[in-house]
Amino acid sequence: MRTVKQVSDLTGISVRALHYYDEIGLLKPSEITEAGYRFYDDEALKTLQQILFFKELDIPLKNVKDIMSSPYFDKMQALKSHEKLLVLKRNRLNGLIELVNKTLKGENTMSFKEFDMSEYYKVWEEYKKENMDKVIKTWGSIDKFDEMIEHIKINEAKIAKNSIEAYGSIKKCAEAMKKTLYNEMLITIAEKRKKFEKDCLEDNHPILKELYKKLTVDLSKDPSSKEIQQIAKEITDTAKKDYEIFNMDKKGNDRWYYMSKHYLRNPEWIEAVDKKYGRGSAKFIGEAFKIYLRDKHPKLERLYDKLAVDLSKDPTSEEIQQIVEEISDTTKRNNEFYKGDTGLNYKVFFSNMADVYLSNANKDMNVVDKRYGKGASKFTGEALKFYSENNK
Image (cartoon, rainbow, N blue to C red; front, side, top):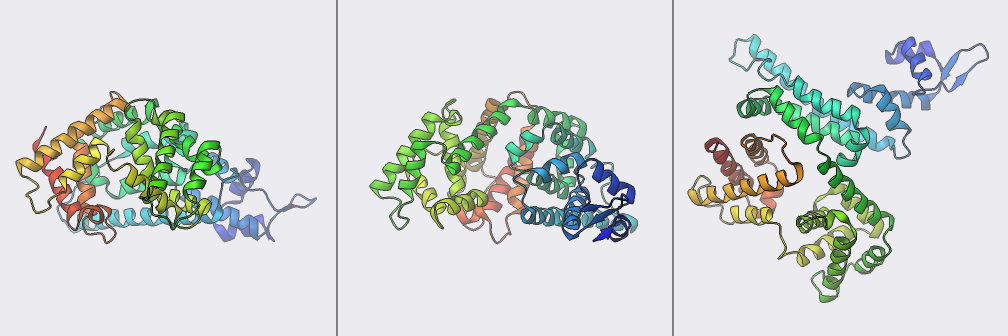
């Protein structure tokens, strides 16, 4: 057991701050003597360590309390998330230090003012503070939301440059982002998808419960067999009939297609499904849906397939650029259908998308190359880049 002074000396947290943590119920002493002295055991110190991790990531204390008091809070998972976010933060700071050193040496570098993203980040932070429940429903957790922000910060110079070119200023870009974030249609779609996922994992839908059980009873079967394909059809028909997200409009078919891809692409969903039905079940289910839905690909998916069908072609050629233009038009229609007038600038959108493909081009686990062949990510990035630079 340690006194409050000993804990303060050990952690660098002031005695006054520890008293405040006690007052707001964030960190209670393990024991308080009759004389009023506070003592903390090892378990309390572990809790304090978690608090400090969250504090280092600039999460408000009120939110830290809500997160840690949640029945779903997992200490080990939180530590893994903290590690990931702190590494991203460290990499970002290293990049800034390198930029400062280059500036001190007189090298021609972009000034800090040019990529001041404070207005942009302010929109994200205000949204998080005002919509904690919506953030969790949309991104899955506060940690995932913060991880996404850290990824943006790593590439903020490039994003700032593209945003200024497209919107005229970071402030105008932030205003457009705010319109997108506060769009209720997107929030509603995310909530409805989470409802379906929850019902599947918790067996809240009796018919789907039996169908998924029937589908995974023998994972050695051929997912392309008539028996398995019939079950895949029944699951698809049931989901599209009973869940609004899959029948609210003509895009319901597209959303079911992308939902089915979670069984093959989403690590967390794969882990949850395998835990429920047995190891390898997510892959089996995903393969079954992949076969059943092979003729029902969304238009955007078919266009990307068409784009990468022959990687020996010139990505700047008229033929390839016509496909990219179709991708642009389809993306714009889809986004405007769901988001309305968000102010989204498609020139910067495709420029950023191009950067993503090009930055992933040399990665060993490149999903685009794995799907379409070696060089597909670079080819797609170059095609999108050329389009964004030559179309207003």
